[in-house]
Amino acid sequence: MSKKIVIGSRGSKLALLYAQMAKDKIIKNTNLKDEDIIIKPITTKGDLVKDKRLSEFGGKGLFSSNIEKELLNKNIDIAIHALKDMPALESKGLMTETFLERNDPREILLSIGKKKFSELNLKSIIGTSSYRREFQIKKMRPDIVCKLIRGNIDTRIKKLKEGTYDAIVLSYAGIKCLNLDNEISEIFSIDKIIPSAGQGIIALQSREKDNKIISILKKINHSETYKRAHAERNILKVLEGDCETAVGAHATIDKDKIILEAELFSLDGTVRFYEKKTSTLDKFKQLGIEVGKSLKTKSNNSYKR
Image 1 (cartoon, rainbow, N blue to C red):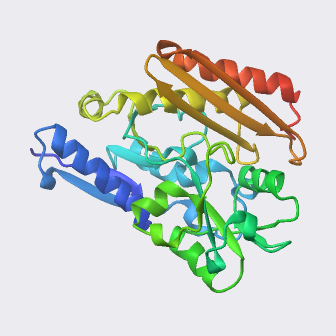
Image 2: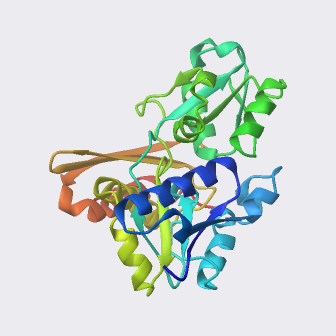
C-alpha cells in the first residue's frame, strides 16, 4: 500500500492504547499490514489546562477539537476519541459512525486504605472533575466534600496517594485498560451511579466523503455498541448538553429489546430527574430522543443556565 493511513489520538498513555486497539482491529479485519498504519499523537487544549473545570474554558470539545482540525485538514485519516469526551453534536464535514466493542462502563472508587464508599470518614474529600459524579456522590452521601481533580489517570492516582484527596472516582474502562485493577476500592453498580453517555466506548471518526476510510471502518464497527452509543448520545442531543449538564445515560440490549435509563440533575444538583424506557432494537435512535424529551419536560429546563 503506497499511502499510509494515519490515526490521530491524544498523547496520553490511555489514548495511545485505544489507538493501538483500533489499529490492531483494522489489521485483523482487512488486508492492511502494521506498516500501513501510523499512530500520530496530538496535544489537545484539554491536556494543557489542568487546574480548571472544562466548562470554565471551552467544554467537551477541548479534548477533540485539535484532533478534528487535523482530520479536516487531511493530516490524519481517522480520529480516535473516548466517546464520553466528545460534544453531543457532530462537527461539520465529519462523521462518527464506528465504535469498538464497549468496555465496562461502570464507575469506580479508589481510596486511601482501600475503604469502601460507605466506610469513608464523615466529610471525606473526593476528587472528581464532573458535576454529574459530584451530584451522584452527594445524593448517596450529602456529607462528602467534592473537590476538583484534573489530569490523566496516573496523575490522579498520584494526587490521591499524596493525600490531597481521601478518594477519587474514575471510569472503570480506563483503569482496566491500564491494568490498574489492583488500585480499585469499589466498583459502583449502575443502580448507584449511572455513567456518562458513551462511557467505555472508543469512537472512530472520519471525513464524511472519505469513502476508502469509511469502508475500512465499517468492517470493524461493533453493532451492539453502535446502537447503545446512539441511544445514549441522542439524549445529549435533545438536551443540548454541555460540560455543565449533569446527565448519566446507560443502554442495555436484551435479545430484540433495548432498555435505556438516564438521570439528569438541576443546575445546583439538588433535584434529580429519572427516566427509563424500553423499545424494540430497531428503534434505538428514537428511544434516545424520547428519553431526552421526557427528561427535558420533567426538568422544565432547570439543568440549564
